[in-house]
Length: 65
Image (cartoon, rainbow, N blue to C red; front, side, top):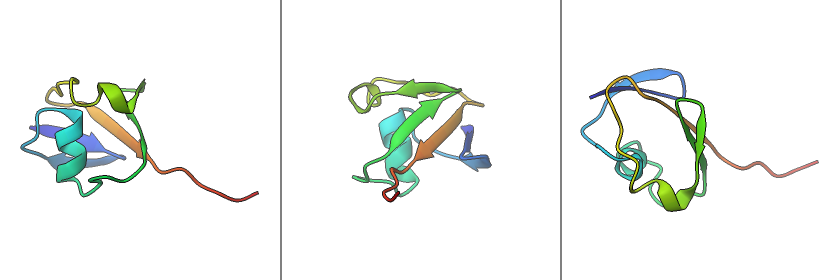
């Protein structure tokens, strides 16, 4: 299916957000996610089924001041 990941078009085989993150190389990384502009908590990622054309944002936490 075609999705947009952090602004870049991609073709993925995954059907859930968890699998899409793994496929994109995020694996066990600590990240925040949103699909189509809606925040998706880590506990809900496995149950979120993606659709063709979805836009996924993945943000890594930053430290510093």
